[in-house]
Image 1 (cartoon, helix red, strand yellow):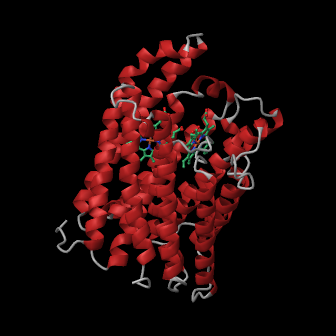
Image 2 (tube, rainbow, N blue to C red):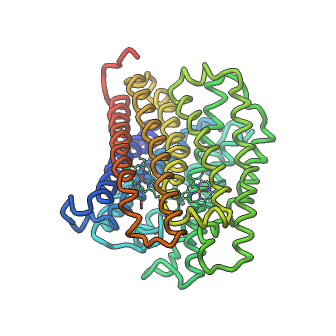
Image 3 (cartoon, rainbow, N blue to C red):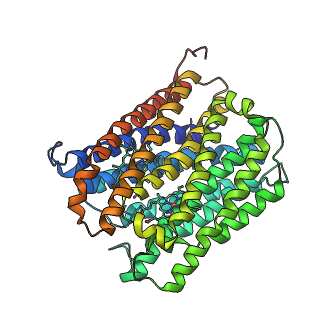
Length: 450
Ligand code: HEM
Ligand code: HEM
C-alpha cells in the first residue's frame, strides 16, 4: 500500500480538508468567546488564549500547509515527467506532519506554548516539522535528479525556493538552538519572531500557491503561459523583497529606525513580485474566463488571485506608519489576515485540491455542485468577515487615537463580533462540505452526475 501512486498527495489532501474543518471549528469557538466570554464555561483547554493558537496553527499548517504540500508532491513529478522518487518517504512525511499537528493541538490546549505568533508549538514538535521539510526536500530533489524533462518550469523553481526558505525560516524563527524557550531575548527576539511570522506567509504559502497557479491556469485556459521571463522575474523579486520586511509588523515598537525604513520600502516594493505574477496569470486567462470558470479548480484559483491582489494592495498601505497608527492592534489586521490566509492561500489550496483530485483518482469529483456550494459559502463568509472586521478595526483605532480606553470601546464592536461569529458558521459549513466531497471523491463509489 505504501507505494500506491499519488498516495502521498491523496493523504495530504484528505488531511488538509480535515484540518480545515477542525481549524474553522476552533475559530468559531474563539469567536463565540469574544461575543460571550462566559458562555462556554471557561473550560481551561478552550479558553480564548489557547483556542486562538489551536485555530491559527491548524488553519495555517494543517489546512493550507498540508493542502499545498500535497499539491507539490503532484506538481514536481508531473512537471519533470518522472514518478515521485519514493511514495514511502512521502507517506512518512505525511504521517509525521499530521503527528506534529496532533501533538501541537494537544500541547497548546494544555497550555504548553512558546508564545510567539505562529511559532507557538514547543521544541520537539519544531524538530518534527524540520525533519518533515528535510524529507520532502530530499524526496522531491531525487525526483528532479531522475527527471525525463530537461526544462524546469517556473513552478519547480518556486517549489524548491519555497522549501529551502521555509526550512531556514522555521529553523531560525523558532530559535531551535534554544529548546527551553524557543526564543532569544528582548527586541532582537521580536525582530526574529516577525522575520519568521512574515516569511512563513511569503515563502511557505505564497511560493507553493503561486507554483500551483502557474501550473493550473494555462491548463484550464487551454493556452501556454503568457510569459516565462515575467514568471522568473516574479520568482527572483519575491526572494529579494519578501525576506527582510517582517519589521513592518513592529513599526509601533522600539526597533531601529533603519530597519523600519527598509521594511516599509520593501513592503511597497512588494508590488513588483505580486503584479508580475498577477499580470502574467491574468494575461494567460484573458478572453478565457469561461474556460476557467467551467473547471471548479480553476474557479477557486481565479478567486484566489483576486484575493491576492486585494491583500497585496492593503499590505503596502498598512505598512505606512501613518496608516498603521490607526490600524495596528485592531480587527483591521484580523481582516487582512483572513483575506490573505483564507482568501488568497486557502482558496488557492482548495483550487489545487479540486484541480488535482480527478487527475489522481482517474474519475470525476464526487460532486462539482457541492464544491460550488463550498465556493460560495467561503466567498460570502469571507467578504462578510472582511467588511465586519475592517469596520470594527476602524472603530477601535479611532477610539484609541481619541484617548478612549480599550474596554470602553468593547461595547461598540459587540455587534460586529456577533456578526463575525455568524459568518464563521458559513465558512465552517463550507469546510465540512469540502471534507465530505474530498472524502467521497477518494473513497466513495457512486459519482453524482454534476
Ligand atoms: C478556515 C479558514 C480560516 C483561516 C485560514 C483563518 C485564519 C486566521 C488567522 C491567520 C488568524 C490570525 C489573525 C491575526 O493574528 O492577525 C485568525 C484569527 C482568528 N480567526 Fe480565523 N481563519 C479561518 C476561519 C475562521 C472561522 C470560520 C472563524 C469563526 C468565526 C475564525 C475566527 C477567528 C478568530 C476569532 C480569530 C482571533 C481573532 C483575534 O485575535 O481577535 N476564523 N484566523
Ligand atoms: C504586498 C504584500 C503584503 C504586505 C506589504 C503586507 C503587510 C502587512 C503588514 C504591515 C501587517 C501588519 C499589520 C499590523 O500589525 O499593523 C500584516 C499582517 C498580516 N499579514 Fe500581510 N501583507 C502582505 C501580504 C500578505 C499575504 C499574501 C498574506 C497571506 C498569505 C498576509 C498575511 C498576513 C497576516 C496573517 C497578518 C497578521 C499578522 C499578525 O498576527 O499580526 N499578508 N501584513
